[in-house]
Image 1 (cartoon, rainbow, N blue to C red):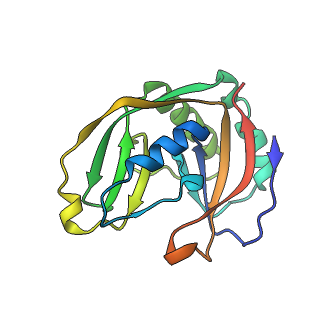
Image 2: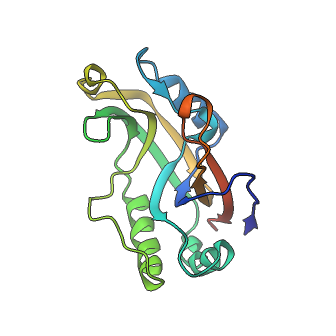
Length: 182
């Protein structure tokens, strides 16, 4: 496990998979509606578990607790469609990823044991490409990604949204810890 110090003090933690460089660039290129503010390529990720504040254990001890879950090995990610979501007003790349859903379930078993509460909404594996969509953009019809965006996730990342935000108020994410999927 590698721990990273972040310049800004984080407030909202989450566990995620991060695309490799080719997948990140491809995903960034899919964010094309001219009326949206796209997520920066460096910040693209697939959230597995939103934690909010860190409770009890430090980042290092939390990741140690999650290490046995990561022994299932790397996971393949295949995102094959784009959707605009009205509720959160987000533009997303999605895929049917049962292996990742299994990883999420295993992570939540460990997280629940140390006091975290899982969101009641069903888990939908996705990478958010843009947020705060205008109403007209939210009406876009789902469409396929041809060819799909694929990568093999080899690490579990503990990230935190930084309260200072980024350019034009975009969320920015600081790396807190990385745990290999071995």
